[in-house]
Image (cartoon, rainbow, N blue to C red; front, side, top):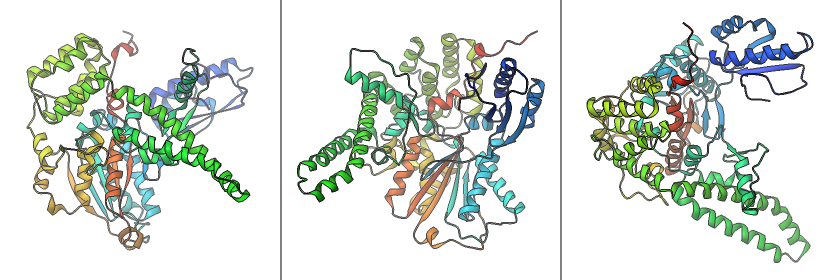
Length: 543
Protein backbone atom coordinates (compact mmCIF):
# COMPACT_ATOMS: atom_id res chain seq x y z
CA UNK A 1 0.00 0.00 0.00
CA UNK A 2 1.41 3.40 -1.03
CA UNK A 3 0.20 6.98 -0.59
CA UNK A 4 -1.03 8.58 -3.80
CA UNK A 5 1.69 10.76 -5.36
CA UNK A 6 2.46 12.17 -8.83
CA UNK A 7 4.89 10.47 -11.19
CA UNK A 8 5.60 6.75 -11.15
CA UNK A 9 4.38 4.16 -8.68
CA UNK A 10 7.07 2.54 -6.48
CA UNK A 11 8.60 -0.61 -7.97
CA UNK A 12 6.31 -3.63 -7.66
CA UNK A 13 5.48 -6.93 -9.38
CA UNK A 14 1.68 -6.84 -9.00
CA UNK A 15 -0.78 -7.54 -11.81
CA UNK A 16 -3.64 -5.66 -10.16
CA UNK A 17 -3.39 -2.04 -9.04
CA UNK A 18 -6.24 -0.50 -7.03
CA UNK A 19 -6.51 3.26 -6.49
CA UNK A 20 -8.55 4.49 -3.50
CA UNK A 21 -9.11 8.24 -3.55
CA UNK A 22 -11.27 11.16 -2.52
CA UNK A 23 -13.33 12.62 -5.43
CA UNK A 24 -11.00 15.60 -5.97
CA UNK A 25 -10.05 16.90 -9.42
CA UNK A 26 -6.52 17.68 -8.24
CA UNK A 27 -5.94 13.99 -7.48
CA UNK A 28 -7.02 12.79 -10.93
CA UNK A 29 -3.82 14.16 -12.50
CA UNK A 30 -1.73 12.07 -10.07
CA UNK A 31 -3.72 8.94 -10.89
CA UNK A 32 -3.44 9.61 -14.63
CA UNK A 33 0.36 10.00 -14.34
CA UNK A 34 0.61 6.75 -12.35
CA UNK A 35 -1.46 4.81 -14.90
CA UNK A 36 0.30 6.29 -17.95
CA UNK A 37 3.75 5.48 -16.51
CA UNK A 38 2.76 1.92 -15.59
CA UNK A 39 1.40 1.27 -19.09
CA UNK A 40 4.49 2.82 -20.68
CA UNK A 41 6.83 0.57 -18.67
CA UNK A 42 4.82 -2.65 -19.02
CA UNK A 43 5.50 -5.15 -21.81
CA UNK A 44 1.92 -5.03 -23.11
CA UNK A 45 -1.00 -2.75 -22.35
CA UNK A 46 -2.82 -5.59 -20.58
CA UNK A 47 -0.01 -6.59 -18.20
CA UNK A 48 -1.60 -4.69 -15.33
CA UNK A 49 -5.28 -4.34 -14.45
CA UNK A 50 -6.31 -1.02 -12.91
CA UNK A 51 -9.28 -0.39 -10.59
CA UNK A 52 -10.41 2.90 -9.07
CA UNK A 53 -12.62 3.40 -6.02
CA UNK A 54 -13.86 6.81 -4.89
CA UNK A 55 -14.45 7.43 -1.16
CA UNK A 56 -17.22 7.98 -0.15
CA UNK A 57 -18.89 8.30 -3.59
CA UNK A 58 -18.14 8.72 -7.30
CA UNK A 59 -17.91 12.09 -9.00
CA UNK A 60 -18.89 12.70 -12.62
CA UNK A 61 -16.49 15.63 -12.73
CA UNK A 62 -13.61 13.34 -11.76
CA UNK A 63 -14.64 10.77 -14.36
CA UNK A 64 -14.76 13.49 -17.03
CA UNK A 65 -11.27 14.62 -15.95
CA UNK A 66 -9.95 11.06 -16.38
CA UNK A 67 -11.48 10.99 -19.88
CA UNK A 68 -9.82 14.30 -20.66
CA UNK A 69 -6.48 12.85 -19.47
CA UNK A 70 -7.12 9.76 -21.69
CA UNK A 71 -6.87 7.12 -18.96
CA UNK A 72 -10.57 6.49 -18.20
CA UNK A 73 -10.76 3.42 -20.45
CA UNK A 74 -7.68 1.90 -18.83
CA UNK A 75 -9.66 1.09 -15.67
CA UNK A 76 -11.41 -2.28 -15.47
CA UNK A 77 -13.54 -1.14 -12.54
CA UNK A 78 -14.53 2.38 -11.41
CA UNK A 79 -16.61 2.16 -8.25
CA UNK A 80 -17.22 3.79 -4.89
CA UNK A 81 -16.61 2.78 -1.27
CA UNK A 82 -19.16 4.35 1.04
CA UNK A 83 -16.79 4.94 3.96
CA UNK A 84 -18.16 7.69 6.21
CA UNK A 85 -17.46 8.00 9.96
CA UNK A 86 -14.17 6.53 11.16
CA UNK A 87 -14.15 5.34 14.77
CA UNK A 88 -11.07 6.85 16.44
CA UNK A 89 -12.06 5.84 19.96
CA UNK A 90 -15.06 4.61 21.95
CA UNK A 91 -16.51 8.16 22.01
CA UNK A 92 -14.85 9.86 19.02
CA UNK A 93 -15.63 9.64 15.30
CA UNK A 94 -14.46 11.63 12.29
CA UNK A 95 -15.30 11.85 8.59
CA UNK A 96 -11.72 13.07 7.97
CA UNK A 97 -12.81 15.53 5.29
CA UNK A 98 -9.75 17.79 5.27
CA UNK A 99 -11.33 20.56 3.20
CA UNK A 100 -14.87 20.60 4.63
CA UNK A 101 -14.46 24.04 6.23
CA UNK A 102 -12.96 25.58 3.09
CA UNK A 103 -15.56 24.02 0.81
CA UNK A 104 -18.56 25.12 2.89
CA UNK A 105 -17.50 28.63 3.84
CA UNK A 106 -15.21 29.69 1.01
CA UNK A 107 -16.19 27.75 -2.09
CA UNK A 108 -19.89 27.32 -1.16
CA UNK A 109 -19.62 23.61 -2.00
CA UNK A 110 -21.91 21.84 0.47
CA UNK A 111 -21.31 18.25 -0.64
CA UNK A 112 -19.54 17.47 2.66
CA UNK A 113 -22.78 18.34 4.49
CA UNK A 114 -24.49 15.52 2.61
CA UNK A 115 -21.88 13.13 4.03
CA UNK A 116 -22.58 14.49 7.53
CA UNK A 117 -26.33 13.99 7.12
CA UNK A 118 -25.87 10.54 5.58
CA UNK A 119 -23.59 9.38 8.40
CA UNK A 120 -26.11 10.60 10.99
CA UNK A 121 -28.88 8.72 9.22
CA UNK A 122 -26.81 5.53 9.40
CA UNK A 123 -26.22 6.10 13.13
CA UNK A 124 -29.98 6.48 13.63
CA UNK A 125 -30.65 3.14 11.91
CA UNK A 126 -28.29 1.54 14.45
CA UNK A 127 -29.16 3.44 17.66
CA UNK A 128 -32.69 4.63 16.92
CA UNK A 129 -34.11 8.01 15.96
CA UNK A 130 -32.61 10.86 17.97
CA UNK A 131 -35.63 12.65 19.54
CA UNK A 132 -34.13 16.15 19.63
CA UNK A 133 -31.86 17.96 17.17
CA UNK A 134 -30.31 21.27 18.26
CA UNK A 135 -28.31 23.25 15.75
CA UNK A 136 -26.32 26.47 15.90
CA UNK A 137 -24.90 27.87 12.68
CA UNK A 138 -25.97 27.92 9.06
CA UNK A 139 -24.29 24.64 8.11
CA UNK A 140 -25.99 23.03 11.12
CA UNK A 141 -29.34 24.18 9.72
CA UNK A 142 -28.55 22.68 6.31
CA UNK A 143 -27.64 19.31 7.87
CA UNK A 144 -30.75 19.30 10.09
CA UNK A 145 -32.97 20.03 7.06
CA UNK A 146 -31.29 17.19 5.13
CA UNK A 147 -31.90 14.75 8.00
CA UNK A 148 -35.60 15.70 8.19
CA UNK A 149 -35.94 15.28 4.41
CA UNK A 150 -34.06 11.95 4.37
CA UNK A 151 -36.30 10.57 7.13
CA UNK A 152 -39.39 11.47 5.11
CA UNK A 153 -37.90 9.77 2.04
CA UNK A 154 -37.16 6.58 4.01
CA UNK A 155 -40.62 6.71 5.69
CA UNK A 156 -38.99 6.68 9.15
CA UNK A 157 -37.74 3.07 8.98
CA UNK A 158 -35.83 3.60 12.24
CA UNK A 159 -38.92 4.80 14.17
CA UNK A 160 -39.64 1.40 15.71
CA UNK A 161 -36.25 1.19 17.41
CA UNK A 162 -35.89 2.69 20.87
CA UNK A 163 -33.43 5.53 20.85
CA UNK A 164 -30.19 5.25 22.78
CA UNK A 165 -29.20 8.88 22.11
CA UNK A 166 -31.27 11.64 23.70
CA UNK A 167 -30.14 14.62 21.62
CA UNK A 168 -27.96 15.67 18.69
CA UNK A 169 -26.12 19.00 18.80
CA UNK A 170 -24.87 20.34 15.45
CA UNK A 171 -22.22 23.06 15.83
CA UNK A 172 -20.96 24.97 12.80
CA UNK A 173 -17.26 25.81 13.16
CA UNK A 174 -17.95 29.46 12.27
CA UNK A 175 -19.93 29.76 15.53
CA UNK A 176 -16.62 29.54 17.41
CA UNK A 177 -13.54 30.45 15.40
CA UNK A 178 -11.61 31.68 18.45
CA UNK A 179 -11.06 28.22 19.96
CA UNK A 180 -9.17 26.55 17.06
CA UNK A 181 -6.69 29.45 16.66
CA UNK A 182 -5.75 29.32 20.36
CA UNK A 183 -2.91 27.09 21.57
CA UNK A 184 -4.17 23.77 22.94
CA UNK A 185 -2.74 22.89 26.35
CA UNK A 186 -3.91 19.33 26.87
CA UNK A 187 -1.43 16.49 26.42
CA UNK A 188 -3.15 15.17 23.29
CA UNK A 189 -3.69 18.67 21.92
CA UNK A 190 0.00 19.54 22.29
CA UNK A 191 1.00 16.32 20.52
CA UNK A 192 -1.27 17.20 17.61
CA UNK A 193 -0.05 20.82 17.46
CA UNK A 194 3.71 20.22 17.71
CA UNK A 195 4.39 16.63 16.64
CA UNK A 196 1.37 15.57 14.63
CA UNK A 197 -1.44 13.04 15.01
CA UNK A 198 -3.10 11.54 11.95
CA UNK A 199 -6.03 9.22 12.61
CA UNK A 200 -4.60 8.54 16.12
CA UNK A 201 -1.24 7.56 14.56
CA UNK A 202 1.94 8.96 16.11
CA UNK A 203 5.29 8.89 14.26
CA UNK A 204 6.96 5.97 16.04
CA UNK A 205 10.32 6.57 14.37
CA UNK A 206 10.60 9.71 16.51
CA UNK A 207 10.45 7.55 19.66
CA UNK A 208 13.02 5.15 18.20
CA UNK A 209 15.33 8.03 17.32
CA UNK A 210 15.11 9.47 20.86
CA UNK A 211 15.81 6.01 22.29
CA UNK A 212 18.94 5.68 20.12
CA UNK A 213 20.08 9.17 21.15
CA UNK A 214 19.78 8.23 24.84
CA UNK A 215 21.92 5.11 24.26
CA UNK A 216 24.50 6.78 22.00
CA UNK A 217 24.20 10.55 22.51
CA UNK A 218 27.22 11.31 20.27
CA UNK A 219 26.13 9.07 17.40
CA UNK A 220 23.80 10.43 14.73
CA UNK A 221 21.81 7.41 13.54
CA UNK A 222 18.47 8.49 12.09
CA UNK A 223 15.86 5.74 11.96
CA UNK A 224 15.23 4.54 8.40
CA UNK A 225 12.31 2.28 9.31
CA UNK A 226 8.92 3.96 9.12
CA UNK A 227 6.94 3.14 12.26
CA UNK A 228 3.67 4.30 13.74
CA UNK A 229 2.29 4.08 17.27
CA UNK A 230 -1.46 4.09 17.89
CA UNK A 231 -2.52 6.53 20.58
CA UNK A 232 -6.00 5.70 21.86
CA UNK A 233 -7.78 4.31 24.92
CA UNK A 234 -6.28 0.87 24.23
CA UNK A 235 -3.24 2.30 26.01
CA UNK A 236 -4.37 2.66 29.64
CA UNK A 237 -1.75 5.26 30.54
CA UNK A 238 -2.59 7.38 27.49
CA UNK A 239 -6.31 7.15 28.31
CA UNK A 240 -5.50 8.57 31.75
CA UNK A 241 -3.32 11.50 30.66
CA UNK A 242 -4.46 12.50 27.15
CA UNK A 243 -7.23 14.87 28.28
CA UNK A 244 -5.28 16.50 31.11
CA UNK A 245 -3.63 19.89 31.05
CA UNK A 246 0.04 19.19 30.35
CA UNK A 247 1.06 20.58 33.75
CA UNK A 248 -0.64 17.59 35.40
CA UNK A 249 1.07 14.92 33.25
CA UNK A 250 4.59 14.66 34.82
CA UNK A 251 3.17 13.80 38.26
CA UNK A 252 1.11 10.93 36.82
CA UNK A 253 4.09 9.58 34.86
CA UNK A 254 6.16 9.64 38.06
CA UNK A 255 3.47 7.71 39.99
CA UNK A 256 3.21 5.18 37.15
CA UNK A 257 6.99 4.63 37.23
CA UNK A 258 6.86 3.90 40.97
CA UNK A 259 3.91 1.55 40.45
CA UNK A 260 5.77 -0.44 37.76
CA UNK A 261 8.91 -0.55 39.88
CA UNK A 262 6.89 -1.95 42.78
CA UNK A 263 5.30 -4.54 40.47
CA UNK A 264 8.74 -5.75 39.31
CA UNK A 265 9.93 -5.87 42.94
CA UNK A 266 7.25 -8.49 43.71
CA UNK A 267 9.43 -11.11 42.00
CA UNK A 268 11.76 -11.03 45.00
CA UNK A 269 8.87 -12.03 47.28
CA UNK A 270 7.83 -14.91 45.04
CA UNK A 271 9.09 -18.04 46.82
CA UNK A 272 6.56 -20.78 46.16
CA UNK A 273 5.69 -22.19 42.72
CA UNK A 274 2.19 -20.65 42.85
CA UNK A 275 3.64 -17.20 43.65
CA UNK A 276 6.15 -17.46 40.80
CA UNK A 277 3.38 -18.57 38.45
CA UNK A 278 1.24 -15.64 39.54
CA UNK A 279 4.08 -13.19 38.86
CA UNK A 280 4.78 -14.74 35.43
CA UNK A 281 1.08 -14.31 34.56
CA UNK A 282 1.32 -10.59 35.41
CA UNK A 283 4.61 -10.11 33.57
CA UNK A 284 3.23 -9.36 30.04
CA UNK A 285 0.95 -6.59 31.36
CA UNK A 286 3.83 -5.14 33.44
CA UNK A 287 6.11 -5.14 30.38
CA UNK A 288 3.39 -3.49 28.26
CA UNK A 289 2.92 -0.81 30.94
CA UNK A 290 6.70 -0.25 31.04
CA UNK A 291 6.86 0.22 27.25
CA UNK A 292 3.90 2.62 27.36
CA UNK A 293 5.55 4.61 30.16
CA UNK A 294 8.79 4.82 28.18
CA UNK A 295 6.91 6.12 25.11
CA UNK A 296 4.97 8.77 27.02
CA UNK A 297 8.01 9.84 29.02
CA UNK A 298 9.81 10.47 25.72
CA UNK A 299 6.83 12.39 24.30
CA UNK A 300 6.49 14.41 27.51
CA UNK A 301 10.20 15.34 27.34
CA UNK A 302 9.73 16.60 23.76
CA UNK A 303 6.65 18.61 24.74
CA UNK A 304 8.30 20.01 27.88
CA UNK A 305 11.16 21.34 25.80
CA UNK A 306 8.59 23.11 23.59
CA UNK A 307 6.43 24.49 26.42
CA UNK A 308 9.46 25.72 28.39
CA UNK A 309 10.68 27.71 25.40
CA UNK A 310 10.31 31.47 25.77
CA UNK A 311 8.69 31.77 22.32
CA UNK A 312 5.88 29.40 23.37
CA UNK A 313 5.34 31.20 26.68
CA UNK A 314 5.30 34.62 24.99
CA UNK A 315 2.73 33.40 22.47
CA UNK A 316 0.57 31.95 25.26
CA UNK A 317 0.69 35.20 27.21
CA UNK A 318 -0.31 37.21 24.11
CA UNK A 319 -3.25 34.86 23.48
CA UNK A 320 -4.49 35.15 27.07
CA UNK A 321 -4.26 38.94 26.92
CA UNK A 322 -6.20 38.97 23.65
CA UNK A 323 -9.09 36.84 24.90
CA UNK A 324 -9.21 39.15 27.93
CA UNK A 325 -9.50 41.99 25.33
CA UNK A 326 -6.40 43.81 26.61
CA UNK A 327 -5.00 46.36 24.07
CA UNK A 328 -6.69 44.61 21.15
CA UNK A 329 -7.23 47.83 19.17
CA UNK A 330 -3.49 48.49 18.82
CA UNK A 331 -0.69 47.06 16.72
CA UNK A 332 0.61 44.04 18.63
CA UNK A 333 4.42 44.28 19.18
CA UNK A 334 4.76 40.48 19.26
CA UNK A 335 3.06 40.15 15.85
CA UNK A 336 5.35 42.89 14.50
CA UNK A 337 8.37 40.93 15.74
CA UNK A 338 7.12 37.72 14.09
CA UNK A 339 6.67 39.59 10.81
CA UNK A 340 10.13 41.18 11.07
CA UNK A 341 11.82 37.81 11.72
CA UNK A 342 9.91 36.14 8.85
CA UNK A 343 8.30 33.41 10.97
CA UNK A 344 6.07 30.80 9.22
CA UNK A 345 3.02 32.60 7.86
CA UNK A 346 0.53 30.25 9.57
CA UNK A 347 2.07 31.12 12.95
CA UNK A 348 1.66 34.86 12.28
CA UNK A 349 -1.84 34.54 10.84
CA UNK A 350 -3.07 32.63 13.91
CA UNK A 351 -2.34 35.61 16.17
CA UNK A 352 -3.65 38.19 13.69
CA UNK A 353 -6.87 36.20 13.22
CA UNK A 354 -7.25 35.85 17.00
CA UNK A 355 -6.89 39.61 17.44
CA UNK A 356 -9.47 40.17 14.70
CA UNK A 357 -11.94 37.66 16.19
CA UNK A 358 -11.85 38.95 19.77
CA UNK A 359 -12.13 42.53 18.45
CA UNK A 360 -15.08 41.59 16.22
CA UNK A 361 -12.99 42.90 13.35
CA UNK A 362 -10.00 45.22 13.31
CA UNK A 363 -10.13 48.97 12.88
CA UNK A 364 -9.63 49.90 9.19
CA UNK A 365 -6.16 51.40 9.75
CA UNK A 366 -4.99 48.36 11.76
CA UNK A 367 -6.45 46.00 9.15
CA UNK A 368 -4.62 47.83 6.37
CA UNK A 369 -1.37 47.82 8.38
CA UNK A 370 -1.42 44.05 8.86
CA UNK A 371 -2.32 43.47 5.18
CA UNK A 372 0.55 45.68 4.04
CA UNK A 373 3.08 44.09 6.41
CA UNK A 374 2.04 40.54 5.50
CA UNK A 375 2.33 41.17 1.77
CA UNK A 376 5.69 42.92 2.18
CA UNK A 377 7.06 40.14 4.38
CA UNK A 378 5.76 37.12 2.44
CA UNK A 379 4.99 38.46 -1.04
CA UNK A 380 1.90 39.40 -2.99
CA UNK A 381 1.42 35.70 -3.78
CA UNK A 382 -0.49 35.57 -0.47
CA UNK A 383 -3.06 38.22 -1.42
CA UNK A 384 -5.66 35.49 -2.23
CA UNK A 385 -5.05 34.07 1.26
CA UNK A 386 -6.00 37.35 2.92
CA UNK A 387 -9.14 37.49 0.76
CA UNK A 388 -9.98 33.91 1.82
CA UNK A 389 -9.54 34.74 5.51
CA UNK A 390 -11.78 37.78 5.17
CA UNK A 391 -14.47 35.81 3.38
CA UNK A 392 -14.69 33.11 6.08
CA UNK A 393 -14.68 35.70 8.88
CA UNK A 394 -11.24 35.07 10.37
CA UNK A 395 -9.66 38.39 9.37
CA UNK A 396 -12.13 41.26 8.96
CA UNK A 397 -12.66 44.96 9.50
CA UNK A 398 -14.67 46.22 12.47
CA UNK A 399 -18.19 44.90 13.04
CA UNK A 400 -20.67 45.23 15.94
CA UNK A 401 -18.90 44.13 19.13
CA UNK A 402 -20.30 41.09 20.89
CA UNK A 403 -17.33 38.96 22.01
CA UNK A 404 -17.01 40.71 25.39
CA UNK A 405 -20.73 40.12 26.13
CA UNK A 406 -20.45 36.46 25.14
CA UNK A 407 -17.31 36.05 27.23
CA UNK A 408 -18.94 37.46 30.37
CA UNK A 409 -22.37 35.84 30.06
CA UNK A 410 -21.12 32.35 29.19
CA UNK A 411 -18.14 32.56 31.60
CA UNK A 412 -15.55 31.90 28.93
CA UNK A 413 -12.73 33.41 31.00
CA UNK A 414 -12.19 31.68 34.35
CA UNK A 415 -9.80 32.97 37.01
CA UNK A 416 -7.85 30.76 39.43
CA UNK A 417 -8.03 27.67 37.27
CA UNK A 418 -6.72 24.49 38.91
CA UNK A 419 -4.80 22.68 36.18
CA UNK A 420 -4.01 19.66 38.39
CA UNK A 421 -7.58 19.03 39.55
CA UNK A 422 -9.85 21.06 37.25
CA UNK A 423 -13.43 21.96 38.08
CA UNK A 424 -14.28 23.62 34.76
CA UNK A 425 -13.74 22.99 31.05
CA UNK A 426 -11.40 26.02 30.89
CA UNK A 427 -8.51 23.76 32.00
CA UNK A 428 -8.03 22.78 28.33
CA UNK A 429 -6.82 26.30 27.51
CA UNK A 430 -5.54 27.31 30.97
CA UNK A 431 -8.37 29.67 31.82
CA UNK A 432 -10.35 29.99 28.58
CA UNK A 433 -13.47 27.84 28.15
CA UNK A 434 -14.14 26.87 24.49
CA UNK A 435 -17.34 28.59 23.35
CA UNK A 436 -18.40 25.51 21.36
CA UNK A 437 -18.21 23.27 24.45
CA UNK A 438 -19.85 25.91 26.64
CA UNK A 439 -22.79 25.92 24.18
CA UNK A 440 -23.01 22.12 24.37
CA UNK A 441 -23.03 22.44 28.16
CA UNK A 442 -25.79 25.08 27.95
CA UNK A 443 -27.93 22.91 25.65
CA UNK A 444 -27.73 19.90 27.97
CA UNK A 445 -28.15 21.56 31.39
CA UNK A 446 -30.98 23.36 33.17
CA UNK A 447 -31.02 26.66 31.28
CA UNK A 448 -32.70 28.62 34.05
CA UNK A 449 -29.32 28.89 35.79
CA UNK A 450 -27.80 30.63 32.74
CA UNK A 451 -28.91 34.25 33.11
CA UNK A 452 -28.86 36.25 29.87
CA UNK A 453 -27.67 33.28 27.80
CA UNK A 454 -30.65 33.37 25.42
CA UNK A 455 -29.93 36.96 24.41
CA UNK A 456 -26.23 36.25 23.95
CA UNK A 457 -27.07 33.21 21.81
CA UNK A 458 -28.69 35.56 19.30
CA UNK A 459 -25.44 37.56 19.02
CA UNK A 460 -23.40 34.51 18.03
CA UNK A 461 -23.31 34.12 14.22
CA UNK A 462 -25.58 31.53 12.63
CA UNK A 463 -29.13 30.27 13.01
CA UNK A 464 -30.33 28.44 16.11
CA UNK A 465 -33.24 26.06 16.45
CA UNK A 466 -34.41 22.93 18.26
CA UNK A 467 -36.20 20.24 16.25
CA UNK A 468 -38.20 17.39 17.76
CA UNK A 469 -38.23 14.15 15.77
CA UNK A 470 -41.23 11.88 16.25
CA UNK A 471 -40.28 8.40 17.51
CA UNK A 472 -42.73 5.52 17.90
CA UNK A 473 -40.20 3.48 19.84
CA UNK A 474 -39.51 6.23 22.39
CA UNK A 475 -36.35 6.36 24.48
CA UNK A 476 -34.88 3.08 25.67
CA UNK A 477 -34.09 2.49 29.34
CA UNK A 478 -30.44 2.67 28.37
CA UNK A 479 -31.08 6.02 26.66
CA UNK A 480 -33.03 7.85 29.38
CA UNK A 481 -32.92 6.26 32.81
CA UNK A 482 -29.35 5.10 32.95
CA UNK A 483 -27.59 7.09 30.27
CA UNK A 484 -28.39 10.62 29.11
CA UNK A 485 -26.32 10.48 25.92
CA UNK A 486 -25.64 13.52 23.72
CA UNK A 487 -24.03 13.36 20.29
CA UNK A 488 -22.11 16.57 19.47
CA UNK A 489 -21.23 16.95 15.78
CA UNK A 490 -18.72 19.65 14.81
CA UNK A 491 -19.24 20.71 11.19
CA UNK A 492 -15.97 22.14 9.91
CA UNK A 493 -13.69 20.37 12.38
CA UNK A 494 -12.82 20.35 16.08
CA UNK A 495 -9.68 20.31 18.21
CA UNK A 496 -8.44 17.65 20.63
CA UNK A 497 -8.75 20.19 23.45
CA UNK A 498 -12.49 20.52 22.71
CA UNK A 499 -12.76 16.72 22.80
CA UNK A 500 -11.00 16.76 26.20
CA UNK A 501 -13.42 19.41 27.51
CA UNK A 502 -16.45 17.34 26.45
CA UNK A 503 -14.98 14.23 28.06
CA UNK A 504 -14.51 16.27 31.23
CA UNK A 505 -18.24 17.12 31.19
CA UNK A 506 -19.04 13.43 30.76
CA UNK A 507 -17.13 12.62 33.95
CA UNK A 508 -18.75 15.37 36.01
CA UNK A 509 -22.19 13.80 36.21
CA UNK A 510 -22.76 10.05 36.12
CA UNK A 511 -24.88 9.02 33.15
CA UNK A 512 -24.42 12.32 31.30
CA UNK A 513 -22.31 11.07 28.39
CA UNK A 514 -21.05 12.90 25.33
CA UNK A 515 -20.17 11.26 22.03
CA UNK A 516 -18.13 13.45 19.68
CA UNK A 517 -18.21 13.40 15.88
CA UNK A 518 -16.57 15.81 13.48
CA UNK A 519 -15.74 16.39 9.83
CA UNK A 520 -12.05 16.63 10.76
CA UNK A 521 -9.79 16.71 13.81
CA UNK A 522 -7.73 19.86 13.39
CA UNK A 523 -5.70 22.59 15.03
CA UNK A 524 -5.20 26.27 14.24
CA UNK A 525 -2.35 25.68 11.81
CA UNK A 526 -4.07 22.88 9.87
CA UNK A 527 -7.26 24.97 9.63
CA UNK A 528 -5.35 27.97 8.25
CA UNK A 529 -3.34 25.81 5.84
CA UNK A 530 -6.57 24.83 4.06
CA UNK A 531 -7.20 28.54 3.44
CA UNK A 532 -3.66 29.55 2.42
CA UNK A 533 -3.30 29.93 -1.35
CA UNK A 534 0.33 30.50 -2.28
CA UNK A 535 0.11 31.69 -5.89
CA UNK A 536 3.85 31.16 -6.38
CA UNK A 537 3.15 27.41 -6.36
CA UNK A 538 0.23 27.65 -8.77
CA UNK A 539 0.52 26.38 -12.33
CA UNK A 540 1.34 29.13 -14.79
CA UNK A 541 -1.55 29.97 -17.09
CA UNK A 542 -0.54 30.02 -20.78
CA UNK A 543 -1.64 33.11 -22.72
